[in-house]
Length: 611
Ligand code: F6R
Image (cartoon, rainbow, N blue to C red; front, side):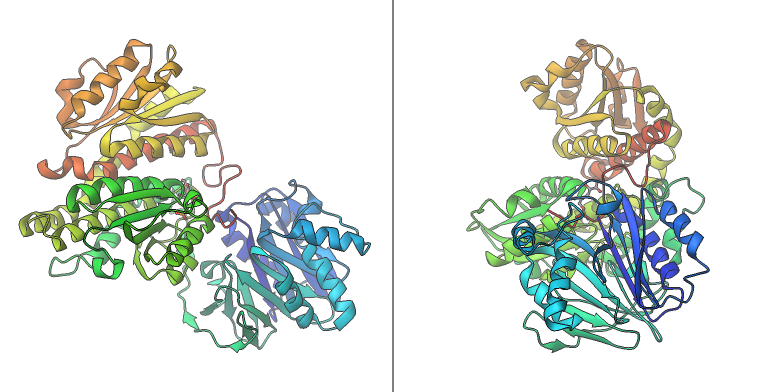
């Protein structure tokens, strides 16, 4: 979703701003722009499409604007108004420029008021009300800072914005719900949508609290809280991490992120398992109480992780688990008397739906636990307790390593609650930890089947519709497989619980339609295989991904990829983690065959900060 940058006090500010925007590309965008001051004149450069377009325009001016010391920039993911140059940020009014992420919910009302004052609108964005309000306020007060504060009082919604005025080398910024981070340089200051994006320019950052606003010049940052009081916020040291932008020889970030999962899971497991074979998870901090359940809220792939988590937590600890889509939970007046705890899962820690669901849970007196990949993200900072996935930066828009690391955390939570509640024996618990440590190595074996998934991808790449099936603990994997495929390859695909096929979806099957099924030996494999036979009998072109143990039972299925079997007692338990690899590789290779933009699929954003 939109990325914001602002730089004040640094020579060649536009070039640096462009580099920060490059680091924010992963968030997804469809146009980009810069505004800068040259001899107190406000100028803009804007381009539709990828940043290279903006860069080309910048390069024609580069020599002329090398000495520019102040610039703001933006990558826009369209919400209000089409992807056209007029709607591309920065949005101007007279000598004011604004970049904005989020949604101004009362923009219609403000637009009407401004039109009555004869203001002429040139864009169809919600953002445009901000520069116009600022212009009007400047006429009354002639004080840019006061004008900005009056706008913060007036606008509603979830937003982050940065504004500049041609009269002064300073940047005003404000955030409500959407993220914004300040960076402290030597003789210059910066603002960005996340810390990583500005880490090449600064060693210290300040995370603004929700509702904070601030004014930055080259030597000073002054922050104010929601009560308009000057405040100091903690300065945090960050390490520059250039490596995240390297593909390490892979063609796409997604490919790299799929293949680095064994190493990533070593980190995740290392952070969870203490030396003395104890899980570093504290159910007491999560407020897990006798006779009360847990609600898990998340979106997209993280929601499918939550669904797997439900199977594990209920199976091992008998604590009831309610899984909800974050975007639904917030508005449906949930009855919470049976629940004492909410877990939210978010790779980015910034998904607004999940942040809002968590705030709703807090309002309803649930203790909140965040499973997130990003320390100091909004969700991390607002949660009562956080467990980090330690997956490292994920650049590809589609979640891969973040999903498997979330699964590791969820299974560990299940086992820790189970041992605390005496639902499993200490031997079982120790055996779990022993086997958990074997998972990364085992994933490498599944990854070595890459060629088989390339072949599978080649045989389904021209299909118009594809179904994914799974049963029990692999049902959420069918949903995840279908989501991965549709978002990357744009092929219509749906996931179903195999047992549900006969209740409706079986009507979709026509001659030759690819049906991909994930199968593990969990005691239900016979039933799953029967479901598969039903699909086969109706002309479905079956592709079975199964562990080795089922080999004898699936002799009449032509297209299959057999994944190795894990340790006897744990094979089916860990199977969602193992089957994630086929789900990811199939989608990746189909997309690659079709030549789609694997790392930044159309219309998608990595960090979804609008409702
Ligand atoms: C799919 C995908 C999305 C995210 C969803 C939640 O590949 O990446 O569905 O899982 O937008 O994002 P987070 O986990 O950052 O809250």
